[in-house]
Length: 218
Image 1 (tube, rainbow, N blue to C red):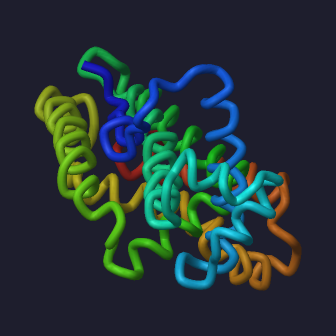
Image 2 (spheres, one colour):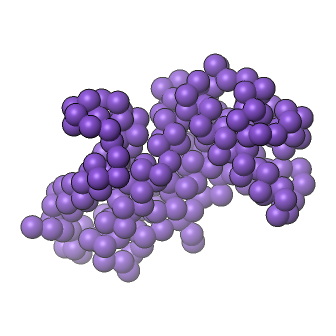
């Protein structure tokens, strides 16, 4: 079974099967909305602003997503789906060191390339996850528990140091997403904007730190 939960399809399924034009339009809208929601939040954003950012008539946004709430949920679901793609590396037959390293690199790459995505998601969680609480308690919980059982098996087989698998994921999420969510703080402490060089250094640190904690690196 694939590790990738189809949160977009199951949660905000369109009434018409997507074709190439529909997919292209939805992608434009979702990317624009991600940036607007990251800066203004859900309450501070209007459909007019979202349409302006996407370069499309407001009627087009309503056609594809209906309401601001549905669009916001679609943005969140798309973000979660992208993040969780990296969990596909965690398979029973995989080498623990490489699997965890791949997952970390995936998360750090998305943090670098899509910092707004992390901020939108953090804002949703700070509000108590009103839009995607059901996804967190459903698909996300089931996926993370499946992956945690794989890590538990690695530990039983002596392939890595004993850690709490669920809290390992919480730690990974915190370490990778902090560079987007608290970019201003990170940049202030570093004394420089958080650019590619800083993020490469951060990615190397997080990977090394986690692998050592799991007994997978010296």
